[in-house]
Image 1 (cartoon, rainbow, N blue to C red):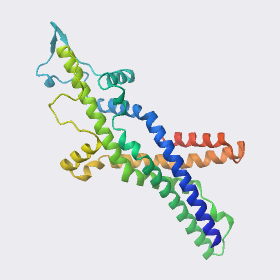
Image 2 (image 1 turned 120 degrees about the horizontal axis):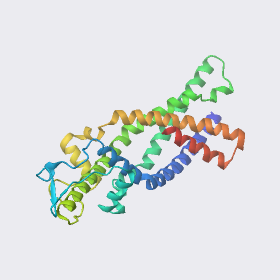
Image 3 (image 1 turned 30 degrees about the vertical axis):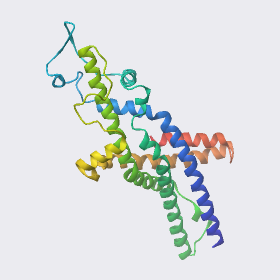
Image 4 (image 1 turned 60 degrees about the vertical axis):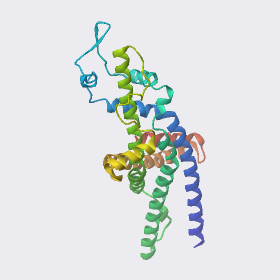
Length: 280
């Protein structure tokens, strides 16, 4: 009983430290890399569009500007997407849809680490009970195999993806796609009339004013289930990703512990880097 209480206290402390460290790391990485997510989403949302904006947007098959035909081509490279995004929205537009993912980081980490640790504890309890009933209780009862780590990580990632990640990313992507569309219309207006127009002043369609407006609009139109569009592929991505994250971390941690020492900071950093690569 005393041993179990000691183990539970140790687990609780580990979970708390992991949550705090993971939340801080998640917030930092989100702030640093969100602009790349914005550009990626813009490129993906425009991938199936034609090389020119549709003529229906302007009511004719071509644009005339100062006597010459003018066409509006979409961006093709990452650099072009960056420059157009900044031109028609400023640097702030690189953080379109940031608020929900940023606020969700602590929730993500709490869910992933809690589910993972709970699953690991359940496996250990089950094996302890089996060995006790079979009079085979040994020190190996405290071991978690690589396959156990994978399953626990996949369960944690899948739960987190379905409950939190899917609706958060859906809202974020809707805001990014909206900015892409409005920026394209602003570019079209500039090419047609030779005068720049502020993004979002079209007046031709309803413009969602932030994440909560997206949520309200989607629920009104599709019901609350509309926020979970794409849940299946998100669950597949994050379950496999989190499974490989924890497996990569455990294998790397064990390797660097034997090569660099028990409490090596470099070893911990390298194990964390390996886990990040394993996720993707």
